[in-house]
Length: 206
Image 1 (cartoon, helix red, strand yellow):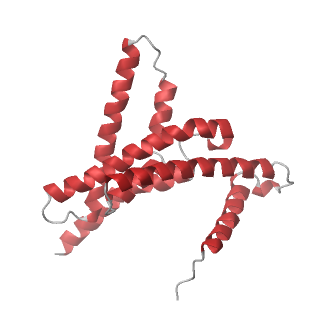
Image 2 (cartoon, rainbow, N blue to C red; image 1 turned 60 degrees about the horizontal axis):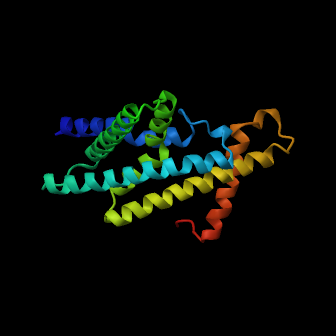
Image 3 (cartoon, one colour; image 1 turned 30 degrees about the horizontal axis):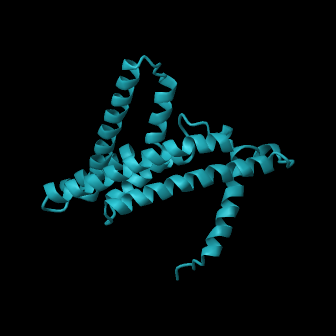
């Protein structure tokens, strides 16, 4: 009995390390995307790619949930679901990118490795993976999943423009050396998040 519990805990930890924690890694801006160099034109240029990847992730999460319900009469343990969602999303992404590269090659167009790498970084970034998990563990239909993905893409665009605005304002301030860069940005965003949190009207749990 105890060995079964240990095995399930290890599987849960492995699933989290492989899939779910990728969300937090990308959320801090670690990866191929150069968040520090974002400007409004680049934000608009990249937002539609992020939105398309989020829609693909939403459909993959919804499809994975339907597959699990149909193929597993008994409920599949929660820690085994993220690999299923991630596997469907990866297969769909590789298929679409493979078709695009094949079509571009037949038309004689160059296939930039940098562009392919950039699309991969977005696909497995914090937002699409978050959308993937939300829809995989959710209860909504396909239409709700797609609508949520479109909203997530719009939110990404607003967040990118907001971060650019913050950086522009901070460049005009005399910031102590120890707080320059990421520290002052996190403090600024944290204070702004507290203000927005208060406007929503949340209350502390008693």
